[in-house]
Length: 305
Image (cartoon, rainbow, N blue to C red):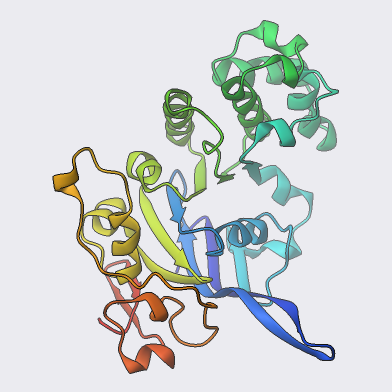
């Protein structure tokens, strides 16, 4: 596996109290391996609790993996210093919470430059504000004076002010109106052309259909499927991917996919396939182990292949 960022058999476990004296480990991620190339948008999709945000936190070094490695340009990320935060940045879901309301826009965007002691800060701030399609007059305003789309543009300006190689975008359009979403997605596409790679975390299949080069599907902390956007969305190989696609809103009822999945309350199993209790194609092996199928960069963790 090679690329700008490499995630190699990464697992993340959290201790969970079971009774008065007993503790077990809940695995938010289980043996996930994938890579991100330069100037690539990798869409990471799955339901709430699938492990998407945990993956983002590990890449941002907000959490440490329980096992496995994360490499950036061939180096273990936890062995790197401040240069890593200069090369890897983040855009959060809700800019209202991620932007300091007491600071002016110019101070918000300039802050990473101050931390990394970069010169010519005023010039750089003006350049990135123009790049995210905001007028220079916005620099004197505060977040509460801006619309949701404008605040997200400020957050993106802050993320790109250090010329990063990779941005983790965690549900960056989820809190925006549909028309504003389209504008923000177009901005991400323009930044990609300038050489920035993205891990684009979302629950919305329609977003990755618009913007992603490759798609990684997570469920229960496990990588279900990974491949090009066309492969995964047009020819899904994992039952969970088909389940996600069957729930995407369609233009006409005739286009609905008839799929049969068990809608039951259950605790995600920490052994075997996490989707097994709901899977219409379940076989006994799925409760014990999951086989990995790989061909020409297409990865499917499923016993049906």
